[in-house]
Image (cartoon, rainbow, N blue to C red; front, side, top):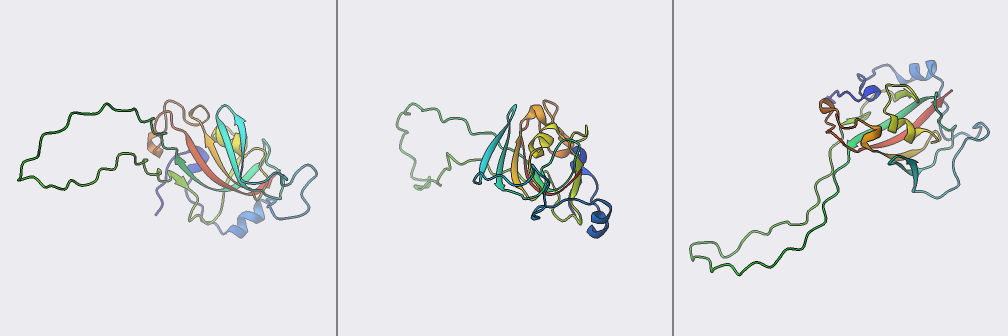
Length: 200
């Protein structure tokens, strides 16, 4: 069973209603159609591409959607996986040569095990996800319960888009973090999202 965390809207209890009921009560415009409103629709730019949303928030678009574009005030259906970005490894500082060590005693093993010196830390596991949910998560852009960086990253994406949103601490949980959700202080968050629908 998936662990329930608390990331605002992102950590609501798993919804068990059939997706047909949700779609009947919330008509979302999904990607893939050819009748999107004027001004909406996919970009002609190649993918993947990076969009700077300001204040350290970046979006890497990996697939363009063809539906209406998300705006503040819209209700958005998304699938997502959230994780904490690993800290960048510090630049290796040159070390001075050390004096030659004395010869080992005959009782010690002549073969030492290899030491991994420049191994990057493993990718952090997800802290929250809609994987296994019966229905997508629905959020309203601009709602105080939605992380500001997530709303900023989603705004301007068309339904059907998949993207990687990087959220700096200032637009996430800041210096306090969210320990109950596995978010340390001053953490940068990464959301892999798919925009499943947009409702005005």
